[in-house]
Amino acid sequence: MIIGEITPTYNLDRYVDLNRSLYYNLQRKYKKIQIISCHKLIYKNSKILNKNIKNQKYINLFEPKTYLELENYLEKNKDLVIFNNISPKFYHFRIFYSLSKFDNIQLSLNNMGNFSSYKTENWKNVNISKKIYFLYLKQMAHLAFRILTILNIFKQIDIHFETRLDLKKSYQNGMSYKIKKMIPFFKTRFKIIKKISLRNSQVDKIKLKNSSAKYITFLDEGFVTGDAMDREDNNFLKNKDKYYLDLKIYLRSLQKILQKRIIICVHPVNDLNFYKSLFKEFYVCKYRTDHYIQNSYLCVFHNSSAIVNALLLNKKIICIQSKLMSKFAFNRTEMFRRLFSFVNHDMHQLINADKKKLIKQLLLKSKKNINEVKKYYHIDPQENFSETIFNEVNKIRQSNS
Image (cartoon, rainbow, N blue to C red; front, side):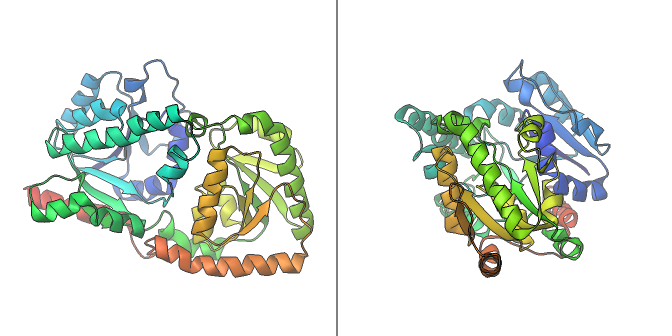
């Protein structure tokens, strides 16, 4: 069996870094991972960031220049099992159509446990023109995708693996699945939904044994990513110098109180050299977030999805906020604060807390988060991710034969 993933992202280096544990587990079973990069099918002249991916010996990268090349590749690789996590947007529809011409088994996966909110991200923080744009980009496209799936123009995903227990329940209690129970031949986006362990939970016990408490790790935010800029009110761009100054003062005071070295893990889309010049007194790195979370005494963040790993490892966490952030980032931070129990700080206020009192607060909150994590996520450290996929795919093959 050949395992691959199809993706339209331009930043393949970031994509592979985010999926490092997934690919590591899969390549142990299947030796090679096929990555099909479709970005240039949509954006002909766009630059693809793939410097680091080419150094990964277990990855074969295929970059079709035309849809005919993609279809010829799929025709030659009929045994390829494809992870298809492409979002149902209008500009991706041609990719879905090409995939639907062939009988490759398609899987989708959410094992990172990220949180999002349509209201917070696409409605609450944007003007009327952006509201209309996001309705078109997301809601209308999703409706059109559903219709084309029902009409069998787009092929169903054979299995969706989901780590978020609340999302799995939401899918299975949704209108489409209620109709499917009454009309068995009715087509939903996913034929089957299976729960899967949260990212890295397979190695949590090993990590916990090998983890340390050496550092205070700050998880940087991608304030100028495409998603953020699409919703940006220019607040951050106008105030970024003051924001970075406040952040430096805050981290410096935290370091003084706890007597731990500060590590800044730069967001994959941000300029590493810029951060190194800005935060000369701290250690600044990129693509080593998991390592430093594992070895942290304390993690500090706004609304980074990487915080899930800190929650898994039951690390002490401070969620910081600033009015200098964009409304989009500010409200996403509020969303995380509602979901979990963090020690919450305002970056504008100097930390005058007594060390013992702060540590007591951090310990109390981390204990509460143990139950919160179990409420949202399926976690099974004994689960063999590769075997789970292998077994489910074999079931499909047996039923198709």
